[in-house]
Length: 349
Ligand SMILES: *Cc1c(COP(=O)(O)O)cnc(C)c1O
Ligand code: SF4
Image 1 (cartoon, rainbow, N blue to C red):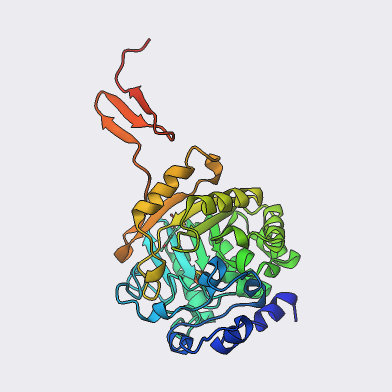
Image 2 (image 1 turned 180 degrees about the vertical axis):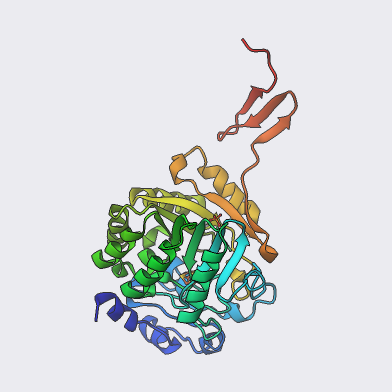
């Protein structure tokens, strides 16, 4: 068995194992696990330094998950926007294609918490082939975003087969894979895997890191292998209360990602997903954090802070308000708060 499969096999999946390892009482978690699955592989478990730290909060279930009376199972209306099972067609030129229901670690804040890692997400060879056929039949689709679950939990052979079939579609230009594996199970990124991926360019990977403690040597090795295979790397971070909702943590994360050749792409406002309400911050605090980062660090390290609108409205950028007045002159604050003016209609000099 390969190393990454062994690490996955050693995952913590029951409250007793958590209780034993951290010497705490976890009985209450049984009721949470009846609704939402837990899987913490031994690599990610090893990143926890203390009970309740930012790694713990992402991985270990919390009784608040089943007391959430505010949020909804499917806030982005993904099921309504699926012309066939496991394919979400929301924007005209790109689709989200779910190819597995498994992840290397079940994130407590997952947007697809209603079904990821459970029998409520049924993916078969037939649903995968139906997705590929849909993309072939709908010629306006320029890009496919392969997600799940985590696509990199598929074997190299299965992944190669899906990518090969997608690449045979002449109207499909770009393949994008969304994966948390470089963060949660970096050993999965092997030379054999990168050899498969690089056959299918232009192929992009958006990964998902949320905290600087996740930027380990193993994660660096994984990102390095992918970047060396010519794969442009982006990161989709989620803004999470108690995990990364302060500008110092995010500054350190985003600059650390740049050093690994990963471009911060999105910082997501937490979705209204049932079981994740305790992670939500006010959008004002996210906008304030962006204001503290923009201009102060490299623009390369600045993601778009985005809110995925409820009911499938799509992603909306949230930005600090720089504009003070829009008359004949545009008046605005710069990143330091200094008032600046740009004449819109002045006579040419
Ligand atoms: C986020 C998302 C995309 C991709 O959006 P980008 O802004 O291009 O990253 C595509 N389809 C669905 C359904 C999505 O949720
Ligand atoms: S890796 Fe992604 S899909 Fe899987 S549980 Fe985490 S957020 Fe959800």
